[in-house]
Length: 194
Image (cartoon, rainbow, N blue to C red; front, side, top):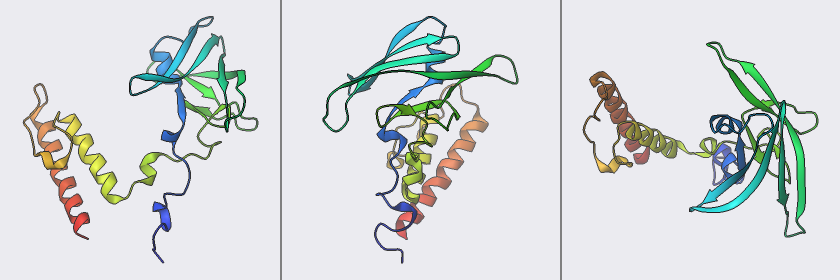
């Protein structure tokens, strides 16, 4: 009981969303590529180099994705299929756009689709977990510390010491974040001693 690889920290579990290429409709909306009749290329980068790309053509209530895919070292296959979109009104005006998952029987309204077995689908269809769900207690505490340090514009890593109040930040906000930082560092050091 509680041995190596048991419980929720089992690294052999579900793939994570970080393991798949994602298509984010919120970013597409921000970049202005969702106007009906427009088309663009969408690229994924690693170390400054393009590792994958697709063509996106926009129509009134859908986007058409065109790309080439190869699985298991087989032949390249052309993929060209529509993904429906849906707009919902926001409470304070404007509208938000969503993908409707193209997997038959799903149709979930989602902001991101992931490229898995030749087609894009929602994370539920591919049974993907978020990377943060795989973190142990120390890793999640370190991530929270670095998130606070980023807001304070301090160098990442709790061993780098504390910095000064960033220009333009309210004193109350600075003191609250500094206090939260101290609590998280104490929590991390305590969990490392256990």
